[in-house]
Length: 405
Ligand SMILES: O=C(O)C1=C[C@@H](OP(=O)(O)O)[C@@H](O)[C@H](O)C1
Ligand SMILES: C=C(OP(=O)(O)O)C(=O)O
Image (tube, rainbow, N blue to C red; front, side, top):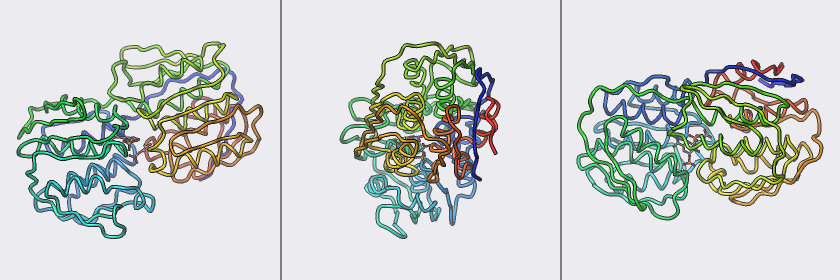
């Protein structure tokens, strides 16, 4: 499905209920499989959480998790320690290119039986579940925090718990803290100090019901709309000020675009205020890589320069996001310089019209570019890719006056 979008509304208003965080949901689904006393509310309806749930229910044989990075990484650890199960874990063509060797090596050092079925270091994997007894493991921490979270999630179910020694500079740290926090909410103890994580063993947990907060990465597209619009008032729920999600830093970052966030008990209200704002936006996004595309496109729409750093993980996500951003922003006439871990967008005075955006099987390419329709008519190709994290995105988007066909 290709979607041609435009919006000539001057004053944007809506009240939206956004689906649960897929990161929180996929952690809780693993924990629930290990500790059935856990119940979950406001679970994400994203494809990534749907495939995770289905994989855990199936539990054996061929399991296809499509594009879901967290499902691939968390399930690799989960099935490795599930005695007696035999699983072939596979995914989309892109998933077969996304590296998993560091996690597989760590699990093997703990005694896991995992083999590669196609290319060394990448899915698909053949996993024979075994009792893992090693109390400690080492892992490079600068490639993906998902490997670390995967080990943390199985940690409490291992006989001696698990010590994880992190080597190198830790990346995407808020996701590690999210895992620790969710373990705590479930009644499972752990600590993270000076590159050492320790997860205590526990056989059972008490009955506990854990609510998932709505997804902050999904909220980023409404921050962008608010920043680009002349006037906007957008209410989003269910959000709270003390969030486990690192992408809640959006509230602070988007102040630089004149977006004010008012926190109420269970929701946030985004209000557009008038400038002036500094011309060049500089952000180190190593702690919140998923909002890089949103921020870059907001700057493109507003003709602002930006220098985004800490982007070393973007090349191994749903697509090479640095290259995809450069390709698509340049179609509007922008000048974009990228390195392995940074992006520099130069101020772009006027935007070319009628651009068709390729989405590269990446939900965030579709959603990050969509707000540009406030400035110029655009077409988003394969617009249904959004379902990876936010299946209702287009429905919610149109509530703000966007016309799409
Ligand atoms: O643990 C998680 O839920 C995630 C961690 C991050 O990945 P990396 O740690 O690979 O950067 C993030 O980009 C991804 O969308 C979700
Ligand atoms: C990178 C992402 O997801 P994953 O790595 O879980 O596929 C994302 O949602 O932006």
